[in-house]
Image (tube, rainbow, N blue to C red):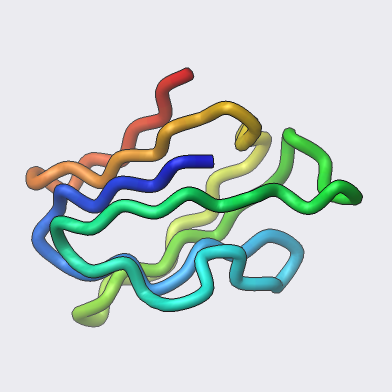
Length: 81
C-alpha cells in the first residue's frame, strides 16, 4: 500500500481492526509504503484519522494490496490501482 499526503493536514492514522498500520503520522507532502502483514486480508475495513479535529472516516471493504491512497488538497481521498 502506498500512501501519499497531498492534502492540507497531517494523516494521523490508518486503522485496520483497531491497529494503526500507518505507524507515525504522515505529514503534508510526504508519502510512505506500508507492507500488509501476511495474515492480513487485502480487503478490509479501514478507519482514517486526519489531524486538526476532523472526525474519523470509516471506509468498509477497501482493497489495500497494490493500492495507492492519495489525500488531495481539496480534502478528497482516492484509491488507485
